[in-house]
Length: 238
Image (cartoon, rainbow, N blue to C red):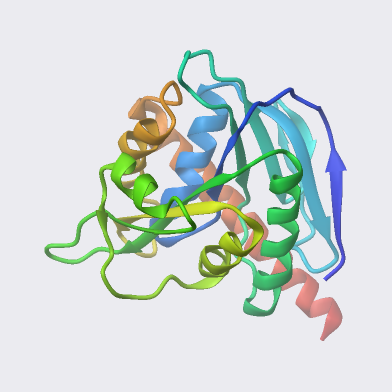
């Protein structure tokens, strides 16, 4: 999988924490990622594109950007760490997850990232609660700091699952926060469950949930566009 990295701005970030927001159940992670970018006025750092990705671009106040984008945040709080947020609207195919994860980890490592936080939606059912899983030499400290109950047994699927076992091999600690969400529809209410644990891990990095409903509608449109592009492309190939 040949992936191109497009550089935009070289922000001076010190010991940044990476936050990953790829599509998941209820679009919880995508909705939250967009909220962070817009409400905290994060700076576009880079984008990634590939012939294997859906052929679309995102048009916004930040200009025109490819399917995968990286944004930076300079933390003004004394004990806060800077942030690099990686996000997209499309879900990588199973065969794309490993090479894409390796490419993203390579980029994050080059920017000095040693800690990664993944946002992930999980199926909602009676009694479901927010859970987390961590890996890396400082995983226990990371879990404790998040204040989220650890997942004792289970499975993390897709792109996030690959990140979980690949990040420690590259010297990075990684935590995935799993928020129960409604499947099949945007669930902005569930997205708010990411705010508190991430703020505990990164003091000074916090947003308010009041615009999440508007953001959900925007994300739904972008997801539909990404899906349509994949379908249109398959017609040309077939």
